[in-house]
Length: 117
Length: 117
Image (cartoon, rainbow over all chains, first blue to last red; front, side):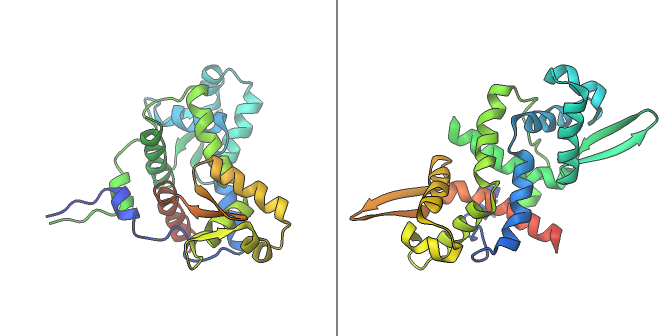
């Protein structure tokens, strides 16, 4: 009986299937660009840890100490990248993490933390 | 006996241990910034698939159709982010992928490809 951790399973596969063309590299770079910002990483981490698993922009301005238009701008980038979902209910839109998309970032972040420790 | 794929193993862990502070978010954003560029993703993919697992800047200008200073600039960013190693031998520096760091990006890229297919 053997168990396989994500890191073990990843060890023997190439990261890229072959040299990327510009056309292949551009959409991938766009996803990384969405999380290449401290405010957007903080937004993802705050929304993931809210009590109901979702938050409206009204919940997010205070912890980040940023204006509503600025927070809305960052939220839109995360929705467009497929990392958050947006559901309109009454006056507000509610944002939740898009589970499968975020899980792969989780593996990467745990590795980063381990390397930094 | 059970096997666990990277995606399965990642499913039940939170991506973030809790809400990130600015100080925690900034170094993570810096790593993502390193790969948030199509030229740098192409460089990683080309170097990973060279015959000896390494390449000098002289091997990389032609496939990317970019000048040596531009390629060197992007290589430096990838070395600083811990995604490439740099070894000086004679006249040239040789770049190779930093295996454990790149493996976690691999899991993420495979998921992206599956979602796009």
